[in-house]
Image 1 (cartoon, helix red, strand yellow):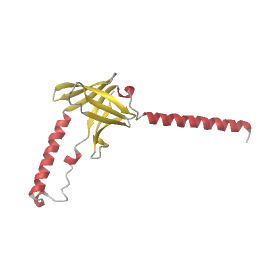
Image 2: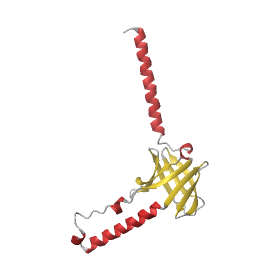
Image 3: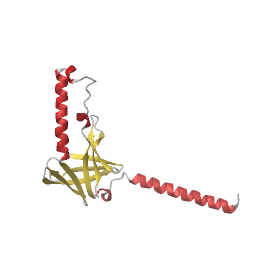
Image 4: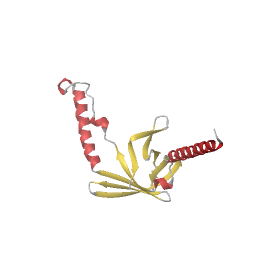
Length: 172
């Protein structure tokens, strides 16, 4: 192999390595919470209440079900239609502002409410959101994953558990 071909091969390898490094850094930074990532409007999404909508009757028709199963089925289908209709009339937006300030805008049945909030970055991909000027400083922790802020709950061991049914997506 001539000196010229080796030099071209080294150049191609270096370009490929630089491209791979840039790609790696880009994907690493997608899940990093910062003021720049948060500032703006985020839409709250609550997935369908699948556990209420899909009640498994264990291949029984209503005539073969005992009274308890029929009552449970009726309650679940009623709750499903009630909450499904209510969720369609709900719109919740979080407007993150600079200096760790935020607003939660709630539009319900033609009414509009605004709640003042504070936010704080806890680590690379976690943000804490709490009510501003409230005695009860309950903190909700959200995790940034693939461009979505995913709600969390504390499990019985005190560890954060992601709730993929409740999340925020960044608006336009």
